[in-house]
Length: 186
Image (cartoon, rainbow, N blue to C red; front, side, top):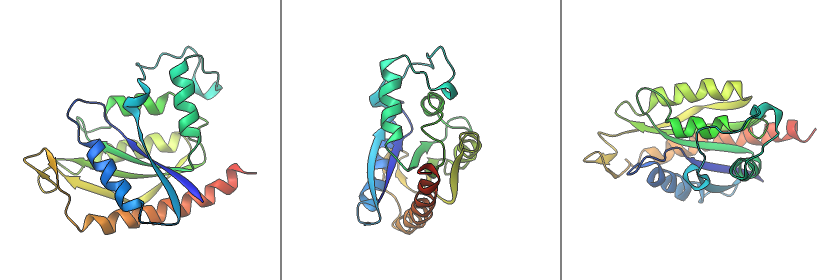
């Protein structure tokens, strides 16, 4: 059975990514075709990329990098829960992604985003990043509106129709994660 990380992609005080990730996790736990775990980048206290050697060399020297690498390596696929900040992915999420290379390779990613435009531009930014890391991103994505899925732009209250979108994205993500696992096992 594949193992999927639901990555909390913001560290900003008052962010809603944790609430969204918990909601995704509750829906995902109803499934029996994968294991799911929430991974919060804030728990790894990653400073602005401080490794002296590029991550593609896999010669990590810092304890926080080693811990982050070990955690990410555990998974076959990822659901990135991301807000949109200034038409792009949050800096903390980009930094966390950039710490590693091989740990991401030949795995799959799905996206749950939120913002005034549903976080669409953040996901487009992430799709480019995933391509460079040899991560297969799935087509289905979940876009949450600050106008319709959050009361007063702050309290997360997703429309019930999004549960179907989550499951469609997870169907694709699990299929790709299973397929790419065979490549990594060669």
